[in-house]
Image (cartoon, rainbow, N blue to C red):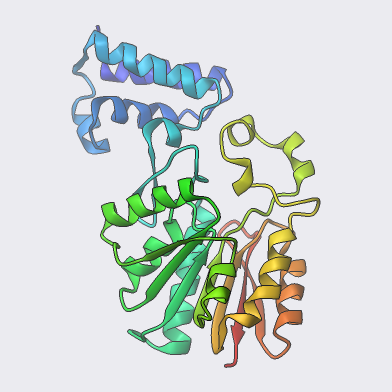
Length: 287
């Protein structure tokens, strides 16, 4: 039997020795004990049962071997909410929170608050973008598409758990389902796969061995899906519309050019994230 703080100290050291982030030790302790951070600190000098410590050790070993801590504990925080994640969906990233934040600000500025607008999240994955947009701006009519039913099931689970049950989920390839139904959309957001396939050699094994490759890689230059989206977008967006992409660092000029070609009169803007990387491209159409 050991104290909680002793278990945490051991795990932090073990993970550091295996070139993993030490902070994961705290997440795994909290998951094992089923407590919040403040509750964990209160229990810091209490004993951890042998059975609990054995379970904890197994989780630490899994992460040391490369399994993402988010998949081990089954969730990741996004925009202040806990989203369920598993191996069928990409783990939500902080950069995508900035895409959401900027989209919400642009909607308020260009359309005004509480406007009844139709929004689609293309390639929704865990549903992080769609669910957050709906919860932050309940007047939006949100549609979320994904090519894979297994991913959509995770998104649906998150929508139900977090109270955004009136989102419409559609299985299909990019904007094809909306085109087939003749729908018109005010806002299109997407964080599609954008990593060039050649980059797999230099990426962390935590990403390449465990996260779904279909949600990561997109052809030789990573721009395959942006090209397709920019061919389809003029067929679904209204005269006045907002389009927002998350892109890989260094891809913004190419993505912006694709949007400028699709919408010659639009205001296209590259936006940098909190780390100074060009991670978002927005087009304001018809304003």
